[in-house]
Amino acid sequence: MTGLRTVAKAAFEGADNVFNRAFTPAWNPLYHLGTLGWFFYWITIVSGIYLYIFFDTGINQAYASLEYITNVQWYAGGVMRSLHRYASDALIIVMMLHLTREFVMDRYRGVRWFTWFTGVPLLWLVFACGISGYWMVWDVLAQYIAIASTEWLDSLGIFGQSIARNFLNNDTLSGRFFTLMVFIHIAVPLFMLLVMWIHIQRQRNARVNPPAGLAIGTLGMLLVLSFARPAVSQAPANLDRVPSVMDFDWFYLVAYPLLDTLPGRTMWAIAGGGTLLLVLLPWLPPLRRRATASVDLDNCNGCGRCVDDCPFSAVSLEPRTDDAPFSHEAVVIDNLCTSCGICVGACPTATPFRRTSELVPGIDLPDLAIRELREQTLAATAGLSGNARVMVYGCGHGSRLDPLRGPDVAVMELPCIAMLPPSFIDFVITRNHVDGVFLTGCAAGNCHYRLGIDWTGQRLAGERDPYLRKRVPRERVAECWTGITRNRLLQEELRAFQGRLGMLPPIKRPPRRSPGEQAGEAAEQHA
Ligand code: HEM
Ligand code: SF4
Ligand code: SF4
Image (cartoon, rainbow, N blue to C red; front, top):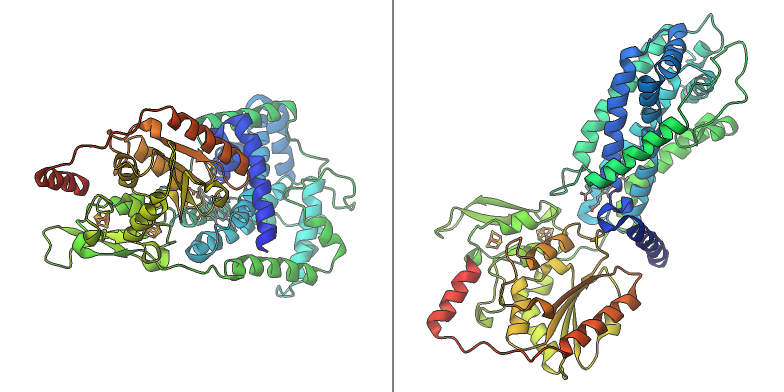
């Protein structure tokens, strides 16, 4: 399984690299599959509302009203109809890719089960929306869908009378089914919106809109497609004939040929079994969880930075429970915590400039405490030689780190790169433990813990607290986000960085500070 997943992950990252070159990482659609899903949803809602104004729900009127929309009002209604159809197809594509991607990237187990679990009903809802939409057109395709779907429902054996009987001839065809279809086609998308909202509740700063450029480009493509190949109806339904030749929408109707060949109950078993398998996937096998973050009240001043930075809403600020002169304290919600350590990187008390004996931050990871990180950093850098000594901090989800080690390169692996407080970079460079710091991890746009790379970039750029202090020469810090596929590029970038470091003048150690100045620095780090 692990081997297969690594191959699939490499394939995704390979595709990402190609798309990055074509669209730039900021607009890479593969990094925005969830937000594109939202975008296509809104396009179908807006175009659907327009169509509904002109749509007539009767058995004879439905087809005619759509013909009017498509042919007479082609410049507005026709375009809206095409947008409606193509955006729904696009929704299926991005949803399937999104599901596969989250699975392959292993972002669905452990505490992330909830987001996966709430995605599963979305699959059924999207298909119910699309199929009921095709049904409303009442052409030969709709006739085929109506008979195949109702026969499938009949095979459950729970309805008193056969539903399929309604669609076998004109005498039995009832207008009530159209009303029911229209109701389903409106109610299901509304319910879907609720489930989509629940789906992202555990993601802090969840993105629901794609970047403007990607949205405009995608909408433009849909418009071009709508003019080049407008969506049209097929021949009107004719219950005197069994529909045989018709155009098929493979995105929504992919299972229908199977309905023709396999018994209805077998298809229920496949659909039910498949859904159950999807629901249970986060526990097959369950993720081995590491110890979750823990708060040390003596060192927590309730500043809330850990709350702002946790990508999974796993820390909250609660009223103080001790006598400390602060109004709030951080509290970790264990069953939401992924043990990524990003909160530790955000905590102003997690600074190696503090004395080792005091180095217990407000929030810490029991499996890799910040004190250990400091000790391991010092041990790893102690034996380095040369004029381009580098400390590499990398995350365990990116390129292989071991090949980077060398006489002038020390390596430390963290759960997520944003666990590293910027003060560590300051510490190792200004105290002359190394000549430069090199940060690496997942591919840009594909952070395993969602926001780690973004937060790191903002902290280094001075846009997010705690930020890297100005006194750290920026030419001594490098970032390289390569993911698992670009090991060679990582090594080349590191060598190039060392080459640049070798040309810089040696680092001047700051003069020893008086105890008063040291106290001032500690206060600044705590602020
Ligand atoms: C209409 C369909 C869907 C839409 C619009 C949608 C949208 C989204 C969005 C916006 C996010 C948050 C992205 C972020 O900011 O990090 C997300 C995350 C996620 N989705 Fe979906 N989703 C859909 C269907 C599904 C399905 C069918 C599944 C799987 C069964 C799924 C599984 C996940 C998982 C596991 C995550 C969380 C990844 C993480 O923790 O980093 N989604 N989705
Ligand atoms: S960042 Fe640190 S000091 Fe601030 S609330 Fe969180 S644990 Fe407390
Ligand atoms: S370890 Fe990660 S998930 Fe857990 S509280 Fe800290 S930032 Fe949130």
